[in-house]
Structures are given as structure tokens and as C-alpha cells.
Length: 210
Image (cartoon, rainbow, N blue to C red; front, top):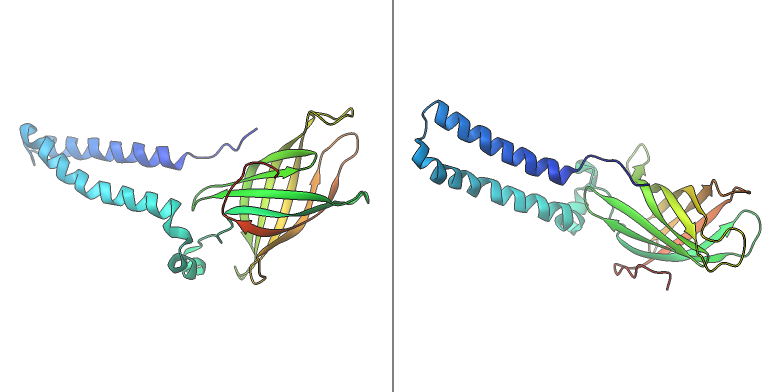
């Protein structure tokens, strides 16, 4: 499964093209510009649109996590920057030994995706959001995910797919930053649940357990 969301980038492109067509139509219909001069007029229009497009891409991918924009986070509702690799442990409520656990967060201003890795499997987020308290001072990473156990596990559950939900509170004041919370799954025959504690390691995404 995957999230079914509005494709913002495609919508922006379509709106830009449509606005250009409508602009051209208005110029011709109301004889504001001659047909032979339309190309040059639209070129000038492009000089306005291009910088706006570049600014939006820069904001979405780079500027939002700079110190300046993070200082304006509360007034602009900019999410906290949690990009990168987080490592720690997962403790199952059934009392089994804790296992090493890793998540990697891909994040832009408008997108968020979480991959997780453990000794027995991996998962990818389906729906992912950052929630806040009423004062917008404390944040929680919340995501619905689909996981799969490794096919080399020597038991009846090898390769099985299952879903789960995780909520991790972001402790920004700690050094290094920490994500701490809980999870539960619909794993069969016995549902699993437990706690997770992770610390931020780096912005490098290894895309694997180790």
C-alpha cells in the first residue's frame, strides 16, 4: 500500500500551464497583444513565473530547515527538522529481549516518509504526519506503516506482511535529539506492541539495517 495524496508538484505545473494559456487567450481576445507579438509577451511572463518556481522548489527542499525558517517555525507552522538516521532499540511488551532498531526519515517541507529496519524485518510508512500539542511546542511523529519479515527467518512467519502504527515523541532539548514512544501491530497469530527509543545519528541515509 501507499498513501493516496494530492500530487502538489504536478498540480503546481498544471496550474502554471493553464494560467499561461488563459493569459494568452485574454491578450488575444481583448486585443491587448497581437498574435505575432504573443511569444515575446509570454517570454516576459515566464521571467516572472520562473523565479517563483525556483523559490518554491528551494523552499520545499532546502530553505525550510535552515536556522532562519526554523526560528519562524511556530508562526509559519513549519515542521521540525527530523531528517536523517535514528538508531536505538525496540522493546516488545511480551518480555522478549530488546532488539536494535533503526528508522530513516526522508523529509521535505511538504513530504514525509519513514523507513524502519530491525534484525527481523523492515517497513515503510503509508501515512505519515507530525502532530503537536495545543501550544505547538512539543511534537510527535505519527505513522501508519506496512512491514515484512525477512525471508531468511527459519519459522512459519518468514516473509509475512503486516501493518502497524507508531507514535514517537520528539525530545528536541536532549543531546543528541531523541524520539521516544510506542507501537502496535496487527501481526498474526499474536498482536505485537511495545516501546521504541531512538537517538539521532546523522543525515546520511544508509537504506539498510547496518
